[in-house]
Length: 266
Length: 266
Image (cartoon, rainbow over all chains, first blue to last red; front, side, top):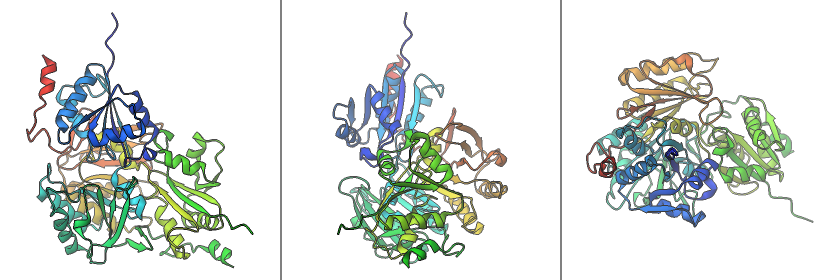
């Protein structure tokens, strides 16, 4: 009698949504899957570059059911890919899938085999559009209080501001919580000067991308949507032309003046 | 008379070093370059998967000269790709290249055209190996005090610990500063219980990868090298089998018990 098939469960971050930012490992995991399971907006990203993809689109908000169904089918021998946006390990499905796997007595390695494929999280996509605002140390904080108490979010914003960390702010605002970015800005303004560089990056690295360069004093919270990533600089972040740069002070230390440039200028 | 060629300057993060984790945009930028400039360890990563790549290997520590030479040649009409590991915008070359460009009066868009291609930074590569330790909010902090004063690093570690942020600690230890991870751990242990999950991920997503799961109480700083990324959990990070998970409490809130699993178990 043949052994039952070994199931396989891949958790794949789709990056910003443009296939040009997907790594080969992610593409391989999608192509190897019998079924690609995800929230509809993400399975649609897959069918955009692979129209015949065997996707199963789920409604928003059914994360536990989605993870549970993925695990159930992988344990039964299917090859399943669970997709989420950006990096599946950052505000994505990887943690929940692991929770469900272990809650069901999974051995940590096989039945099913698990692969987590990292992806370009929104902070990195947005930062690449701005230049290098997260070039040194930074914090990623989500303003969604659906599953994390607002007090915890506020504590983290305050800590990051006090610690002079640059910040990538996820989920800055939604119809259900129009005030969250306002509230976050009030905290940041207590700790950083109003001219601190900031930016809203809408739809980073995908069609419709737009960048608003601003400061924490001038930032208009109503300009943020669910597809906006807000970047806030630290004390060493500078606006340079249409870019934001948080660089380590190679040049300001004067250690090595850029002499070759002067030669070409003559 | 023909117009002089429009130069192009791409800053490309090579990710963890395995081409399977490189996106198409990064590969395209490398293939389109007349010259790929980088620290030798990174240009060797390129020639590993593309033996004929037109690389120019530079010694370590010549970052300003390297960026300046790249800018000079791109302004003269060449197509140059500057490579660094992980994401070029996170402890990489993007900020320095921008500084040099603007210091030379660049217009922010052309002469040369600039493209920054994001990549899988070490925090994401390491986290994917561990499960989802950075699944909610987190901070990235480098312990290298070569260009950032140690007081600043300490302030950021303290803030991240006080703010209950999970942490990705870059450059934890080198021959020149064998004590830096010890000093960081002393700070973390003041704020978090000794059983707080932690891990050392060596060479994440590349040959020789190894994972040490531990706690901040037991973590052995001497096990870290320059290719180790240290992950420290927050108060909601749990060790599950051979994984670390910082998940939003979908299940613990009891909102949606995973009923389909019970059905398949019968």
